[in-house]
Length: 296
Image (cartoon, rainbow, N blue to C red):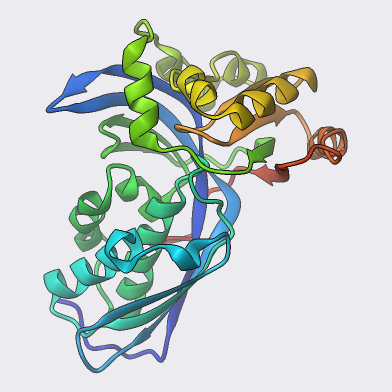
């Protein structure tokens, strides 16, 4: 059981992720099984938790249109309430400043849930291992988001194999207006399933032992085509990314975001300059990182 709060507040960064590869390996119990290689990037939401004397969990969201998310649909609220229920602590007032766009395939909802769990663990002295089942209940990729970094995700995303790698990859994110529903994207995928591929296995090996070109050769997302079919802005962003001659590019997750890998940050900035007059498109230059400690 967690100790009573000894801090006036605890804060952490909840990092976004990019799916460098994503294969669909089948279905189980009505859910799709994935094989994906994900990496944290230096785009993050800021989470600050302050202890309460009762067991209530209040979450206050700011930025990226998050103010309109109903509490009953908010993963961050679920995470906080699950922590209190499981560990018998008092509650918390939690502020989340969002910088990760909603519905962009960057894992923002899962990042916030993981960020709340990490912040409350700091606040109440909980062990990191106690957070894993709580994270899994909040979403299949939330256990990965607890620590982030480079990882291979399998099953529904709950199986996490981490690679303690400090390689840095530079990329341009192209983010069209409006998000994409993951459920709708998987449904669209089922209309034309992708043949089984092994991009994630090859990319995983390339990260551990290969060079930049080896990694880029295996960037692929089986959800890319359905994401483009659902959101015209995603299709346009992907076409624009390809026109910039990156080393590799793909939709991330179920969209709506697209990433383009370049060999240097300078090339990312150059590419970003060619996008500046595009309406309804936000661009960000980011890099991969290995978060320090639990939750960064």
